[in-house]
Length: 191
Image: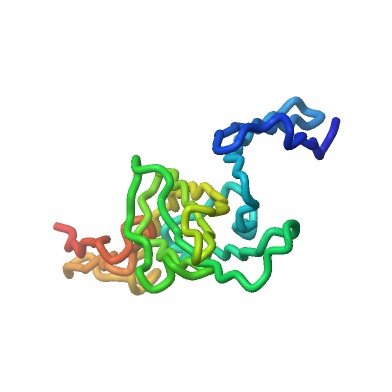
């Protein structure tokens, strides 16, 4: 039941990748696993993380801003270095365009309408030394896009109508948040 595990640097080889698995099980027996890939380096890379949980559940009706602070390594006397930031999609299975104005900043703006329902996006932030662009720290967050229910509405509400006249039922105010502006509703006249 240990929340922190220390890995001795002597057990790691330079320029090798290591995958660490964290398994959390609650008293009901529910389990969640998370993996973290780490690359060892001879020099200390910048430290970077994405604020918030490692998995973000959202939908197309919400815009997101991911924030990723970066910091210089606390050891080795590294001072006065400039960091460059770059956001990328770590998996190419599901792709959408990243905002060009913010993809090289500490905060990335993601319009909800650009994401697709049912997909998982792995978004990665890298922070590198400007004078040593191959020495980078990185962090990853998963975005899980869920479906939202449709909303059916009829304009005008309840009313009394004559059975001898035609009546219009206008459902143009109905909406499907997952379709955005591509949603169309019909107007029908009963016969």
